[in-house]
Amino acid sequence: MSKAVYIEPIDGKPGKPGQVYYPLTLRTHPKPSPQGRELLVKLTAASLNHRDLFLRQHLYPGVTFDVPLLADGVGVVVGAGPDVSNPEKWQGKRVILNPGVGWKDSPDGPEEATGYRIMGGTKVYNKGTLQEYIAIEDSEVEEAPEHLSDAEAAALPLTGLTGWRALVSKAGERNSSNGAAILITGIGGGVALMALRFAVARGAHVFVTSSSQDKIQKAVDLGATGGVNYKEQGWDKKLLGMLPSGKKNFDAIIDGAGGDSIEKAAKLLKAGGILSIYGMTVSPKMPFLMQAVLKNIDVRGTTMGSRKEFKEMVDFVKSKKIYPVVSRVLDTKIDDLKGMDGLFEDMKQGTQFGKLVIHFGEKSSSSKL
Image 1 (cartoon, helix red, strand yellow):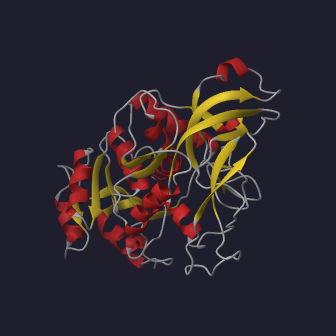
Image 2 (image 1 turned 180 degrees about the vertical axis):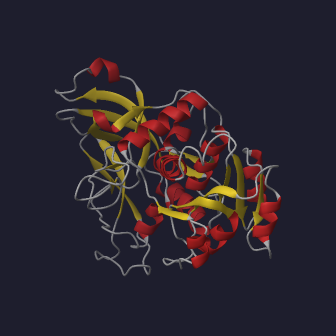
Image 3 (image 1 turned 45 degrees about the vertical axis):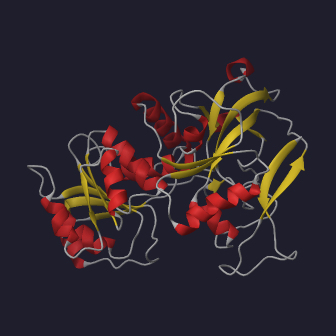
């Protein structure tokens, strides 16, 4: 048998978006039997994303009560379907799961008409990682980096993929590697921290913004050159004054806030610089100013990433021995719904710095958290 965690309606009915908070529930099902080219993976850890909180608040498209939660997961292969060409290659291997499907290798966006479909809690994809066993196509897993613990590996997929595309695919090779000056806004969230990790490993000068001096200092400890409190008057001028010798402006900005980001980018970026936006938490609209036009600022929207980019990201993590930033690990059993609610509360309050992870398998070797 296999246990899995879902959300459930209150009093048997869906609630109003933003006015409900669906409780977690545990269900038990027969262990899946891998078909075709599927692998059977015994999951050991899974991590939260903000979308999971939004699902509980009915603020995410396609909410369902019939698919297990969470998109990030790691586990060990314990079986294979009849059409897996080399089952011995996979047996006993620790793997991380590609968090979505529908996007193979196009640099522009998902090829499938249905778009990119993320695992966990919605009608568009019938799989989630907060369960003991999952059957998944062998083409949708990568061998987990050996230097990462299960909790760290589970923290990697969705934020790692999103951060990689925002930084490397969208900001470009020249603007995200050796000697480039990059600004990452709102440091503390999973995507921003992965972008920081990647940019530092690629040899860029990385600066951050936050309303918390503690988070800025933690970012510096992770390799950032410096940072400023965006609530301070004139923080943009202060940032420009911190650039290394020979740099007058930033090459790229990786932003998840929106709001007045284009206005700030016009002041901070070089001519032709890139504003890569993976989220708009401040406002769903942004004015495009003539200042940005005259300076040839390139504003690029970005979200998630392709299967090809997922592999590129994982290979980079392996080669550079990069560690995702983990805020807290709940080391428990799959039926600890109260403990899981505590992690969701961390996310609600915004107290985390890095990923929130549920570890429900046996301990694996590798790094200590």
